[in-house]
Image (cartoon, rainbow, N blue to C red; front, side, top):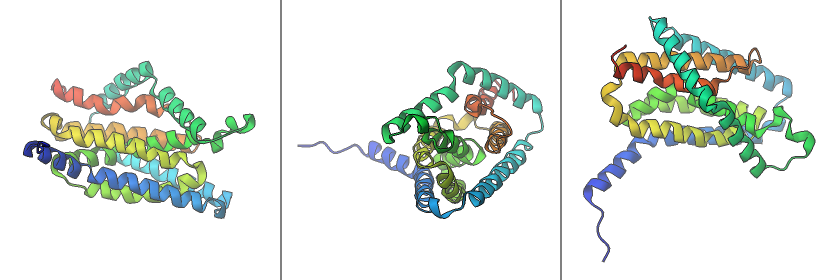
Length: 253
């Protein structure tokens, strides 16, 4: 006879599923928008697509500036960026992300030598750019935390609408890699949502505020990259977002 699953385990699985609802909706929105973008790709003039992408980049920069101004002590942001950047460079997250994108690219597409290094049509570029855009920032982190702590999906649902719309134009411009970024979003937000309960005691308002500030700075940097104004390795700065948690543990902030 099969043993019945303990009620505690069932309750834990059910709770985990509830916590992940917003994450699942967000991932599906990116996939749906990406599919639409691939379908209408040939119907969008390149000039129009470029204008829209530039507009999205400006909005991304605006979101970054707005969030970065929420903190009132630049020292905490400087410490977070410097320490996080040091860790990110040691690990070289940018290289790892690009290698992952290139691996997926090789497995899913067949390219001749001329196309292999065509950055514009690179699946790797679409995957990395979209993953960073959708994972870095206040809405991803705060939305996942709210989902994990109180099953409040409002932020992630709002983010899903934004991501779904932007993924249409991203996919039209950067291709299949945008759809694959939904996997990165699912894992990133899912880990935060499921782990939020365990670190709820150290997620004070000020810690969350400075996580938002640092993440918003990275969003601004991503916007600069989208406009080809800079080539900042945003992925290598990702650990910076979580340094405020460490500062909170040691009561520095």
